[in-house]
Length: 344
Ligand SMILES: Nc1ncnc2c1ncn2[C@@H]1O[C@H](COP(=O)(O)OP(=O)(O)OP(=O)(O)O)[C@@H](O)[C@H]1O
Ligand SMILES: [Mg+2]
Image: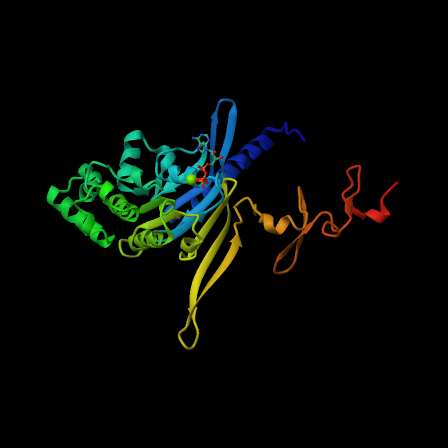
């Protein structure tokens, strides 16, 4: 219906303004108080006529003090997200807030300060984390050059951090004289030099054997529990993801599921670890159903939902999809007919 009445027009305009304000309120309220807020983040890489949608409306909240593991298949968008959180890249659309700073609104100078003080980053490649011609101690002191601290304070703090990370014995060695695990622990000390709120590690144990990987993960846990850094670590190592309380899985550029773990003790004091996997429900009401659940049921394109008083049931639109000999009826009808009742 077209509204020609002036007053109705005003009412419509008022309604739109109200809706806009409501959307803005919802946007502001989302993740209020969280250290990391990713709000419908999109990152599209384009070039040579090809477009890759690396992040497709990703939502993620991380509270101050958490240690979160991120898992996902190769190409699912993990590094893309880490680079955005590190201030090395910007999203194509959506909002990213870290420690109250809207990363999309930072000037280049503010972005540099953000990278130096609010966030620390550890790469998978050990050679990328430390300057090869400086000792471990000099490496840790390097980011502190941009602060107002005295050289003496910086040297003391560098030694303290190397000690907490268990690599004080490497203080005067250059990276080539350190093992891969020692280099990664010195890299964590370097990333922590300016006491960042957020520590990002993109597969920091990817190049290490499993025993060394455990040491490096232990150093990240220390950074979290003793030095108060919030840690987000990308890993393919199930042993690592099993040790954290929260694992976020990314699929096709969106958070798809979360596993939460907690410990309980029986009356004899024996501790048991419980893990529960949840699908992520985003604010638009979207849920990604795991392939291992939908494939065996032949679910595709659409599903039937039924609300029960305490849960929602999801059914394939073709009820016979699992039965042998199943064939969908032709001509766009979607009821299933067994082969022996096939239409002529
Ligand atoms: N600079 C770029 N230009 C074009 N496409 C890119 C670029 N960087 C990443 N991509 C593409 O974006 C998608 C996500 O890549 P990303 O590196 O974030 O994946 P990932 O989850 O970190 O994978 P992996 O586990 O292999 O490290 C992939 O399809 C990748 O090919
Ligand atoms: Mg990656």
